[in-house]
Image (cartoon, rainbow, N blue to C red; front, side, top):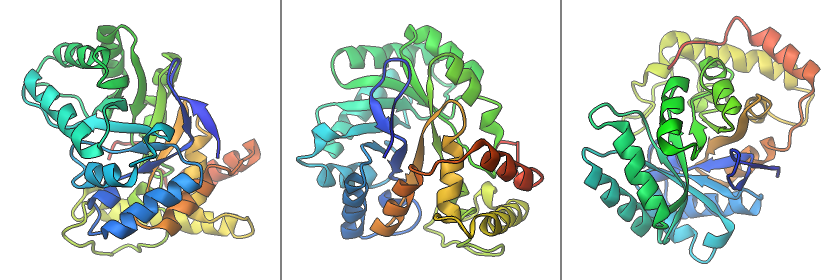
Length: 306
């Protein structure tokens, strides 16, 4: 497992981060036993970075159970997802701390831009909570470069990370905000590197997700996107069939070779997926590899936000 500093002054994090939306129940029901085994398998592989959020259903509660006695070895990230007043921010982080069974969060992120409350007020409140020891580092999620610059200014350059959507299928973030964040010394933690499963080959065009799976009816799974994703899988399968890794691992590794990307958030529902994701962090792609991958997928990749 490889480790890199997150941002200019952040902690050392593994280049694979366990994303906990799936074990929280966001992609269908997962037994608590499988959830805990998945977390333990990730830690056994050297992953020290785990990402959750206020809105990730049972995720924080499950993490709290799984990490008892192991908290000091983990860089734990959560997010402020829902707030309608400044007071709601205090309640949100207090609830997250209670669910996670910890007295501090390493990286606390604003889940998305909000217009109802001045964002400088949100930042001010979060800095106050950080100074009181509720969390160590401040990050943002789903912000574009202009929003990041504005928030970084309000925070006194205290933002160390941004969390954009990025994969070989959905490539808009390599235009904005990954390079701009990098120039500011802000590390990008990319989510959905396997395109929410579209790049794994597991789901063929026409597949119908269950209603308790967040992918049901999601715009990312339009007919065109599904067909593009599966075609990317097919061409990469042919390209990599003589390699010692599978396509899922390849597309994760590809994101990590993007300048400015510090870690890839990879969800998992079972230990086998967790182990496979972790191993992707050790894949080294040459410039020739990257050039070939970009060439054979160029007409299939999407540079629009989804």
